[in-house]
Length: 317
Image 1 (cartoon, rainbow, N blue to C red):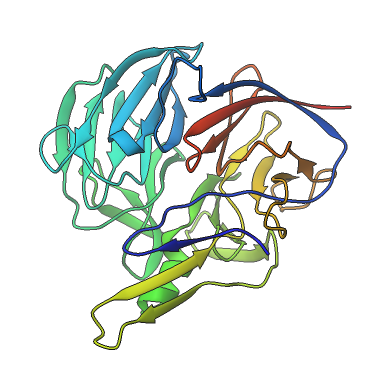
Image 2 (cartoon, rainbow, N blue to C red):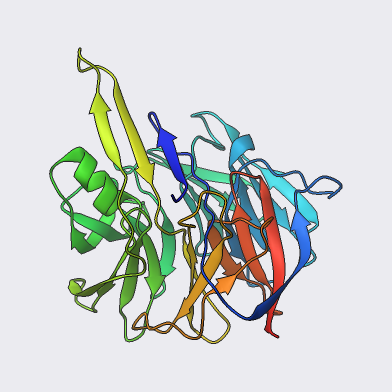
């Protein structure tokens, strides 16, 4: 049985995985582990800057950490709250026009690359994951008829695109609110939904071209209400984690295990989601939800639940 997460009011996630492969995986460093100089508390959204440094949301502390090329702390900024330079429950981060955009509950808090607070934006929508797509700001929509949108410099919706969202809150939550946007070719993109395990190709006109499954497992998400209708409890199972783009332009998907204590695996695919070789089985002690790569080819795995970031060297045996 695969791992799943209960949530009341918000999702707290972790991911692990299973499958098979002949690949050697070496952990080079685990950021935030005991004995490491870097303190992490629910890390997420690791972003590479053009100068070789890194920005990382330390969500449990409501901070952005600015790290050098060797992952040593240069600066930290942000705090919990609703005032200037503050944010809560961050959902994503984008480096855009020499600024750091932190996407929180219903606000976007913008900092300079040096950590100076610049402004808060209240677009009237709750965005989820955000990214740069074709040089433009894009984010998953928290509400609306379509699942994603290009944004203006004020953080408002400029051009919706993607899959159609249900009017039912729970069905819309599962189908739309947890998608990840991945760049594709020819102005197109992929939308990944970790809850359903589905991926959609969105064409240059912003409409669905095809739909495929990364994994097909029994879906175990449900919502229940109390007798008085005032309390809502949702249990949401994640069939995949997030995906990253590898050094060769392939997609790297983290997959949860069908076994409760099974190892995490990674599936590498081409742009049509055709597997490239066997799935990569990681050592038992390595978990992660978000995938990224360093300039020197190390695989990064962000384990929010364990408050660490693994840096791994992956090579064929």
